[in-house]
Image 1 (cartoon, rainbow, N blue to C red):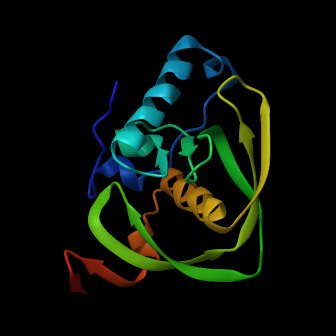
Image 2: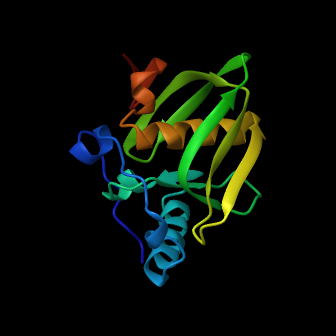
Length: 158
């Protein structure tokens, strides 16, 4: 199933998503949801997707760097960020037609759970680290436009 992407200013994009409980993990419903989120993200030509972007108040993200297998992380937490940062151009499926430069950590460590309930930990750098930060922001009601500089919308700088 392909979900409809929720767009700014929908309220669900600005709230803090709720963590999943142990009994929510490794269920047919969650595994189907994650698979559908991956399909939805690829259908929209994205590299990441957070549950609030499909209208769900849950801490689920999909991270899919180009040419890599997508990762689904439940209740993700960035536990360490590099002091070195770099601005890069970002867009968002929930803010279509808009781009801006966001300064983010070059590398990070993220922890969470797999949909099956197994511990997940990853050290990410570069574009993968950027995707993690962007998607984790969604779980806290933060959109890239809140942090971006030189925002461009429909070819007009504002």
